[in-house]
Amino acid sequence: MSLPRISRRTTLKGLGTAIALPLLDAMVPRSLLAAEQAAEPMRMAFLYVPNGKHMPDWLPTSEGADYALPKTLQPLAALKHEFCVLSGLTHQKANANGDGGGDHARALTTFLTGTQARKTDGADIRAGVSVDQIAAREFGKVTRFASLEVGADAGAQSGNCDSGYSCAYSSNIAWRSENQPIAKEADPKLIFDRLFTSGRPGESAEARARRERYNKSILDLVGEDARRLQRYVGIADQRKLDEYLTAIRDLETRIEKAAQAPDGESLPLDRPSGIPASYEDHLRILGDLVVLAFQTDTTRVSTLVFANEGSNRSYPFLDVPEGHHDLSHHEGKEEKQAKLQKINHFHVTQFAYFLERLRAVREGDQTLLDRSLIVYGSGIADGNAHNHNNLPIILAGKGGGLVKPGRHVAYKDGTPLTNLYLSMLDGAGIHLESLGDSTGRLTGLRA
Image (cartoon, rainbow, N blue to C red):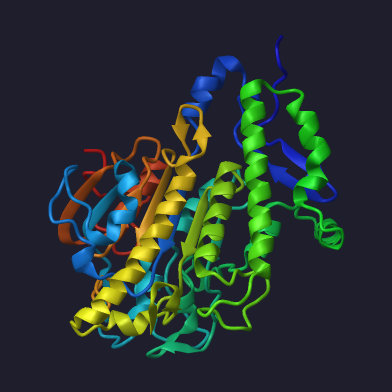
């Protein structure tokens, strides 16, 4: 029996709600299935952590595939063949260069732009277009959202946050233009609604109110459409569809439960409703939302900021009641360095969770991680020194063949991080002469 073909843009609809679907075999003719899967799009995500790392526990001591994972990278042991540690990469434009203090503000602003932020705490902010937004301009032609910006801290968009630099610099990693940063969303509930509603203001507001009034799931609203679709696809697609819908149901339930959880020690009492009391839960739900957005091709570009630059968040659940920023200025004291390493280890653990979620999604004979390029790192290396060279950078995924993971690749200290971004854009078919302070393409990614 020949099963009918369905469109790649098919959605499940109901009461103003529309849920995009993952890639199903039924979406392309069988004769073209293998070629279509091989040409599936690349995704890019950029994950940022503030205040640098405790570098002695971060940097591998040897190069190549046989390097030993340092202490901080141990949570990634099961994923060692899925990423590269890149050392020697630098953001020269995050240095003072005559502008004095403000390393934290410059670190975040420069991370994806490679440009020097104008030192101002007024409305005349200026940086540069970030690499994620360059990719979004192209990818956004065929996706519902050009990009998705999320983070655990919302942050202010004005005021003085770092030695005369606007809070906009410390809070934003994505820049649509040189004077237009893109604010990130911290509330998982709002992100979920944005991703999985029809986008019609009247209808989506009505649907959202109806779901809350009757305590219905978004899947209840599209259940009939989902059941109808399952009758017309093959067994493999039925299983994939069931797994996908179950993942959405689970995520929606976790968001609701997290919003009702008691306030934790590390969160102020006045945090907006919908944000989990647990910082770990918050980061993982944000990561799950990015994975779902990639899986459904709702967007192909995302940024996820673990905390605003200069964050002094405490970590009592790690037996670290002191603030992160304060500890980053460890002054060489072993006790402070040990606590800082605990924070770094925690962040890498959340990164490992995100990569595992990407690896769990199959797309033909590959995984979602295989078809992604994921950058994880910070715009500061050693928080005590406030240096911006030899940054802690990981590149995960294969980018559809652009990268051979599983290695420590050491570059000459001072190599612009923006050289990596040019190579990533090349892999996505987006060719630029330069980006920020770039000097060329980054070699050695395939070797």
